[in-house]
Length: 325
Ligand SMILES: NC(=O)c1ccc[n+]([C@@H]2O[C@H](COP(=O)([O-])OP(=O)(O)OC[C@H]3O[C@@H](n4cnc5c(N)ncnc54)[C@H](O)[C@@H]3O)[C@@H](O)[C@H]2O)c1
Image (cartoon, rainbow, N blue to C red; front, side, top):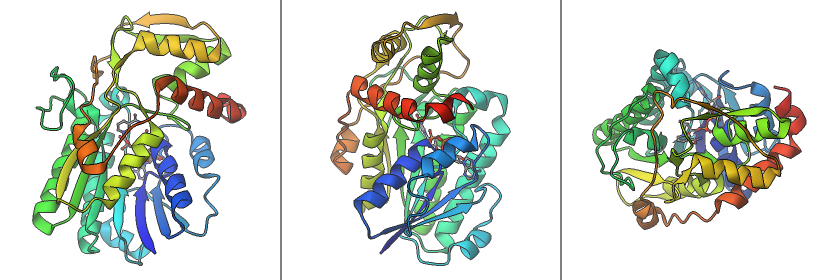
């Protein structure tokens, strides 16, 4: 039986990954580490893990990765581990400008703790959730992995640091390290601070939405199932020892078009309050995914409208919980 340690498994992407892994293969055991970070309510994270938390192949450790030493972690996880899929982080660009030290602590110190744990426990496969935000204000679109990185938020700089730490541990200890740069992920269980979730919640309630800028900023939206396929392929990848790979959709959609699509799906008109663009936010993200196709056979399939509909269905199904918190 394979044994994976997944950090951040009660969050949006992590819970979708664990559900898929457990459904796909009865021969996979998951140890999930999450501390129910207060960035958004624990009730939502409990909802995320509700359908698999009693699965016998699933074990949950409520631990903080930034304060749990590798030695302590070895005490909790005694069985051999085939791979670490490190997804836990303080996420969010704008909040990182308000509390940069907390982002350093979790995203950099936490990653270092897990790499030390991997080294001490002879775990040779490490998959890291990085972010498109590391490209920052680089305007050579679509972004390829070897583009110059020009981050403009504390969050983005912590992700770049994580990629570099991985290089160090690969060179020093031979750990295979695969950093995946996710591009704006959406789908069921999306975080409540992200635009699609925020907009749908407000539009359904008849509340105004805040649009930063004139709506011409754009994002390469990537459906969570496509991201999950990429993470699983990276966990199985054995060809080389250190890689950085974009996981996007290769299609950049403007905020105006996103809002129009949401209006169509909800059948309601958005009440838009326009505000200036926010410090730390980049104007456009756009992924070149040829490397992911080549190395991971990554092939994103979801079209925006269908993916938005899937989020909307999830939102309506859980509306009583989501609207009250
Ligand atoms: N969602 C996106 O669009 C997106 C884009 C690029 C990169 N990413 C990265 O993907 C990963 C997952 O993002 P998400 O949207 O699922 O976020 P999320 O906040 O839903 O999930 C992160 C999880 O990590 C946990 N966590 C936070 N601090 C922790 C700590 N100190 N110890 C243990 N667990 C801790 C949280 O409780 C949460 O459950 C993050 O690393 C994020 O930076 C996400």
